[in-house]
Length: 292
Image (cartoon, rainbow, N blue to C red):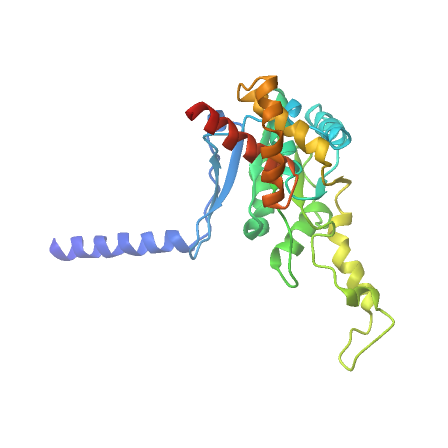
């Protein structure tokens, strides 16, 4: 009997080890737990991933985003088409930092969540799992935006080709209930060098076809059907955004006017008049006023 118990214990230990190595069937999350999810990858031999519900989703609304009306209109319209099962494009949002690229996607989620829109955030390191994620949600009735934030690639990164294939390079058609929205400070998602414009010169070890190399570099961004560019804010725009957030924290007109000089100094110290900087100033200023 002792030998049998010993054998069973060893067999159970062996099965446990095999479970960590063999591919696992993807488990669906409880879709009722929220409308935003993160793809979480478990590092190890099996490298399994799962969709994790986001407990506390940003409550930002489209009306909170100031001085990006053309960009907001484009993204909102494309998302509305998608939610209503009409043709819509994958979207690349690029441009100045802190101008509302990521916030706009989160605001669209809040705008259309009641209509069945869901958001799945995917880290750049996990882009190779995009086919698994698409397969996991393909039969669901909801509409899914796969959200890749602050995306950029260096030469040779594996995620570059994985995203390229997911956008428009696989033998399988892209699922009609999935779109990819990505944000980046780089328009072409990869570093651009002076040598890219010197295709007529060649060193001893130079690229024989430098033009083709440049084309390869920009081919990923071209697979996004909709490009939306964001620009730095003017001083007056920055101050209006500050005023909007101060009002949301309960400040009156006189308090907002009195905060102007402090808001400008704050931006000068940060070296930026972005919407993010305006939000950070408003939180700091309103918090100090309330504590005083």
